[in-house]
Length: 65
Image 1 (cartoon, one colour):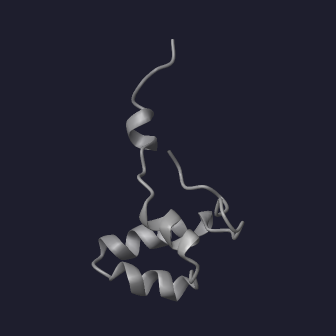
Image 2 (image 1 turned 90 degrees about the horizontal axis):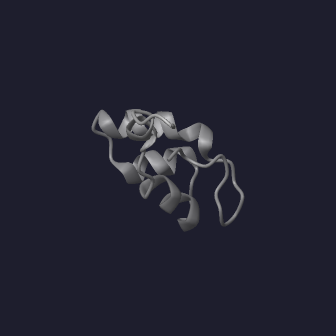
């Protein structure tokens, strides 16, 4: 749904980095260099950013009855 505030494995705050990460990747930067710039060196944090699928806009289309 939305990026977690903290990494599930180590607890490092990563939620505030998602929008910047997404903008930089969409502009054509390499994902590895963006994660390195953010200081995400642990594989758990990197996998949280790389494996995330933003579904909030899709789910927001449906109404709850």
